[in-house]
Length: 333
Image (tube, rainbow, N blue to C red):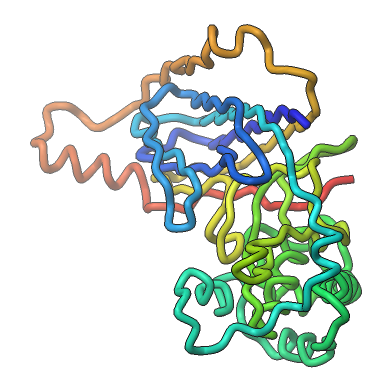
């Protein structure tokens, strides 16, 4: 299946801000389950962009907007061909994964059995894990049981949590969105010493769209990582597009950054995911181009002041360093 993804994020400010440093994770990787046919990024105002891989192998696009501005627009377009392997029959023949032993030599796997910033330790999680059966007929049976337990413990409800909500807070509320359900699934696996990690991505389906979150559980060296969608209660299929993986949402937020200024920030996100027959013929001929937005002149300190005093006034006017809002990952209608 060939899927086109268009992801637009707009950051608006009530008055000019400066010195913004922004990183985004919107570029899908090519792997055994999907092949990226094209990815383009446009940032307005036009600024240079640097790309690198983070510690989990995700592509990160980093840029600065130093001049005064009241708006930043980020638009990413991807074409991804999914060819996900359906593992249901294979999983039905495998045993439920054995817990990872404390002396496991695979450091990368050990990282995903420990608590993390948003999958934190709490009595509510311990109580939930204590109710889970440990013996199952197969890998598939164990996953299905765990998914039912997760949706039974957390009711899906929009706008009851936010992008910074920890698992302990969602459990106290008893409800959340797909981001919270993924955190609970991961927390339960780790409570049984079964490695699990967080997945950020998209899903192609009708209705209101947003970035989606699901999980991967370690099935052993022969099987590797298996994608599970706790919110929907099934294994991930060809309609899912992976963007990034990490310990929890804190590792893979679609946008993250900071800025200086006294204005208030709002964030607006639009996502369009749709299957297509083919890529446009002009995809490689007309790359996306950023158009710079001219900044309005702003009153400033007098140029006759000594350089040190001028710099101090500029710093005082720009205000403290503030953290950018991030977009919450939630399921769709």
